[in-house]
Length: 296
Image (cartoon, rainbow, N blue to C red):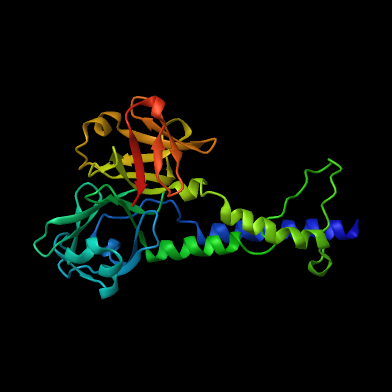
């Protein structure tokens, strides 16, 4: 009883510490990004490409005369290798409609970032429909610190409601693990390697739609971080797509249904795809002409 009480008390302390820390480091999280003047937007920013590990940190600088156009920008050479779209970027500016633009040397916008609702980051859509995120270094540090607190040992322990009579499970010492559990670990690890990658995270990414095994020249992005209609995840067809069938279907949502990929059209109808051994998703032959999605 004393041990259970001690664990419950420690859990309460850990949760309390997490809440207090979250209040301190995340007081400004989710607040609107201030793009009212160059001096307020100037500073270090982190830019990343959605669904990838490609990142870049560069410095936005404000001009002495407080102009909002053709402002200087300092960027490491590695940024252009990590994010090729930055190859033409040399300046930045603020738009009248609360946008932050990355411009080329002549002042033509390359990417136009807009505030993301309920978030501390800005988002921009690239020429092929890809999504870029931009977040200030200060907000990035807050976000990382919050994740570290949430992942700290003992930070989240299930606590029974008062009066339920629930007795917390005793944690078994690592040296006293049952032998059968040790024997089961290799088998489970092997099964996980052999199982198809059909989790939501494994499916998300960019795909090239194929008709009759021929590339349509289009690109479909399956986003697992943004919500789509009716509880789905967001799907987006790149604006440059010229395939009439795909344009008419206009996928806006996706989800997994019993291992099958279900694409939801803007008008609500659904197309189902089966995953093949090479990672390509092939549409159910009963639902129409041959169409497949190849990972890019």
